Amino acid sequence: MDHGENPDPAAAVRPETASRDRRRPPSQADVAALAGVSSQTVSRVANDRSNVEPETRERVLSAMRILGYQRNSAARALTLGRFQALGVVTFDLSAHGNARTLAAISRAAQAAGYSVNVVCAQEQTEDAVQQAVRRLTDQAVDGLVVIEAQILDRPGFNVSSGVPVVVADGDPEHRFPSVDTDQAAGATAATRHLLDLGHRTVLHVGGPQDSYAARRRAAAWHAALKAAGAPVPALELGDWTAESGYRIGRRLAERPDVTAVFAANDHMALGVVRALGEAGRRVPQDVSVVGFDDVPESGYFAPPLTTVRQDFEEVGRQCVALLLDRIDRPEGGRTNRSIAVPTELLVRSSSAPPAGALPG
Image 1 (cartoon, rainbow, N blue to C red):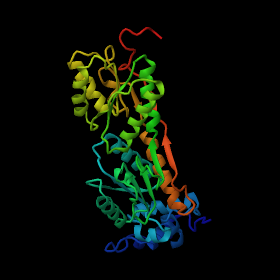
Image 2 (spheres, one colour; image 1 turned 30 degrees about the horizontal axis):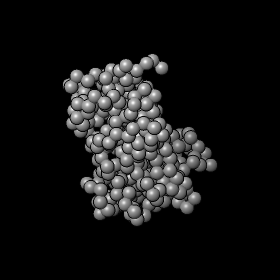
Image 3 (cartoon, rainbow, N blue to C red; image 1 turned 135 degrees about the vertical axis):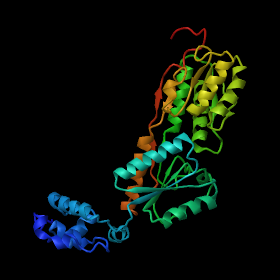
Image 4 (spheres, rainbow, N blue to C red; image 1 turned 90 degrees about the vertical axis):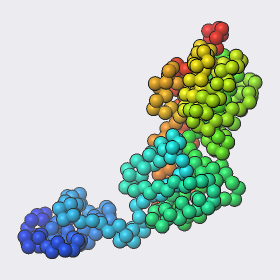
């Protein structure tokens, strides 16, 4: 371990050395002279090596700040065999889940000492995905996270990257390590909650058919109704927007048999609630409504929305942890491991027993 050569930086440097030629950037030798250590010690600090005493490390970092020394990222990458950067391929940053997942990945990466480069692919095609991957690998990243890639549903499709890949919300064939919310458990809990309140059945406003998450939520809703022996209504398909929920809600408001609705996300639930209210159908007295996501505004809907909470922070942490494990151990990492992050049903004021039901 390096204990440092000179505890007094001022004694190690002459004034004329400190006021060196400003026409060139400061070097490791300049930092070493000011800190009173060897160039090898400066190199160890610059490359985050552990075999440096804390006091010595702080002297070197202080000298770097004084001199304005910038660590050479390319040289550091050659030394460590990595660039301390992760790439993210995503497709729709306007979608709540994608934006929250990306933000969580960025925070987790930063905490681990990595920067994040993002490319938003314009469409779900093989060419678009591979082009996005190439743009990121050209920027020198150590690994990739791909968020909600429906293209991965296509049998035989693979991501050719040359670096480790982790998938968030996708990859039904488990070709890569993946992390996702436990979509099935969340949708089952929402459906069971409404059935347990005494509703004869639950109508589902699903997300778009090309969404892996939407399909799993719809499948779990269908299975929960079948398991309970409840009638299975026709699936209503929205597009994640409040406008689509409102459009569907207007149709549902005309049906007196509809007493419970589970929407595949909170924005569509908001649209349903408004449409019901405009038609004179009260929530929850006449129709109970449950959403999915727990967007920050859901507790302030009128009425506050019962919903399924997704832990996007944990999804981001797990994505980064899996990816760093693959980077650190390319052969022995947790190959193709799938992690399902638990959900939580938050019961608020938008769900209640159906009108006329006896107290439980």
